[in-house]
Length: 86
Image (cartoon, rainbow, N blue to C red; front, side, top):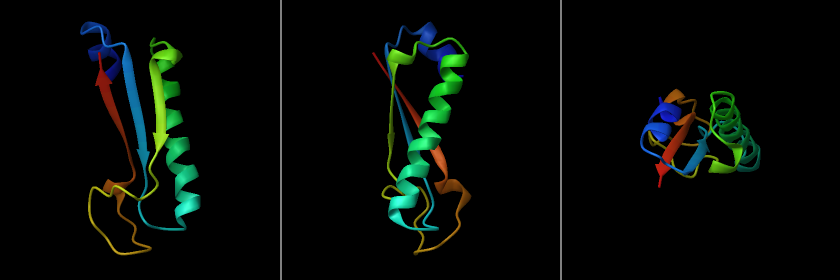
């Protein structure tokens, strides 16, 4: 849906941010969140977006969707957020 929306609305900048839950260390989750964002970017490129239009970032567990304590498994915190910009 994000690729279709970006094409229909002529969005030329896309930011994909990966997030994790609090299981494991911050450093481990930072790399995991970066891989998650890159995986989404790769799929968007496969669907026809230009790789140069998509930036990625990882936030580890610094921006939890569902607040939890340390070492908590929370599926909603394991996500990638796609921001479309013009």
